Structure formats: C-alpha cells, structure tokens
Image (cartoon, rainbow, N blue to C red; front, side):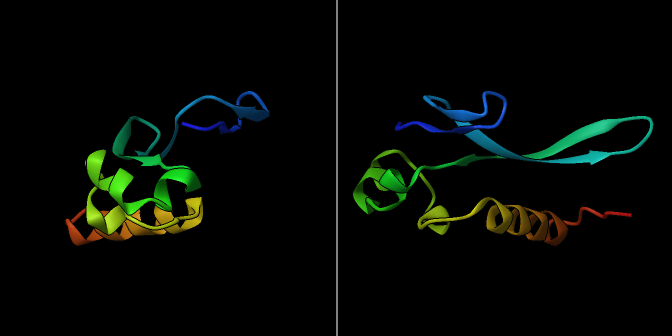
Length: 83
C-alpha cells in the first residue's frame, strides 16, 4: 500500500488505517465495527479491488466521514440502538 496519513505519527507512513465505531459507556466500551480505509490507488482500480476480495458495495472513494455515517447506518439497520 502507498503511504497514508498516520495520525499517531503526524505524517504519511506505510501503515493501514482503520475506521472504528465504538459504543462506550462509563462501565464498558464495545467495538461494533472496523473498516479498512483503502487508498485512492486501490479504489481507482476495480480489478485490484476484486482480486483483493473487497465487497462491491465498498468500491469507490470514501472519505472517513462518509464511511462513519455508512457504518452507523448499517449498525442501526442491524438493530443496534444508540442512546
């Protein structure tokens, strides 16, 4: 993968970037979803996505906010309740 921005390093580096959705309360934190943020080099190449086994609904370029909203919508459709 090409270098991506790594917030913990404050710069671009060879790393994988994940978007996570975590349900947190005072007592417990529960990870509900993890999704790999694919670089533009990958998302611009449908054949590469297919070879890598990326589901077709995740093809295309997604911003982190778009991915977060999509994941929250998916979790709500699955019956997860946020209070």
